[in-house]
Image (tube, rainbow, N blue to C red; front, side, top):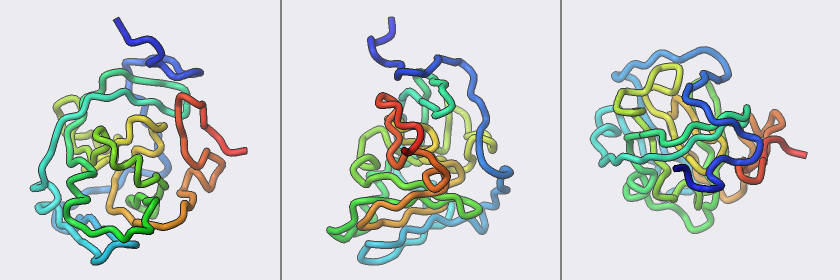
Length: 188
């Protein structure tokens, strides 16, 4: 039996995992891949692939909701919790937002408070397998309580900011926040 109210308004439940993204799937080279932390931090951080994958990981089971009106229940993710990244840096007090940086200049903004939730992680696995390339391999940010465009594929870093600023889809008409239960699909 599913919990009452688990499916956001306007969504349809699916067992499939539709492939949706802007541009082509980037190639991954572990020798050149890095993860960078910039912006309002005391000292910028750069992690190699080996350093990033050596960070503590955990499993999260969460629902996923796409702005295109599909939802999947009980998705199993494994990856590095955002809170583990926070242990490696010193964030300046005025940092309230994060711009998530991905391959080919793709970005998405997320309030820092949302990233600190226990279900937010940098996923490397989906349902016990490495992430498929078309779904973000090698690293996808997972922010389950927001629409899936905030769960950025092919993540390469984060920039801490004092003010909120729109990322790629937000600049193209999507809502600045993206709460599926409030149907915050588009701005305006």
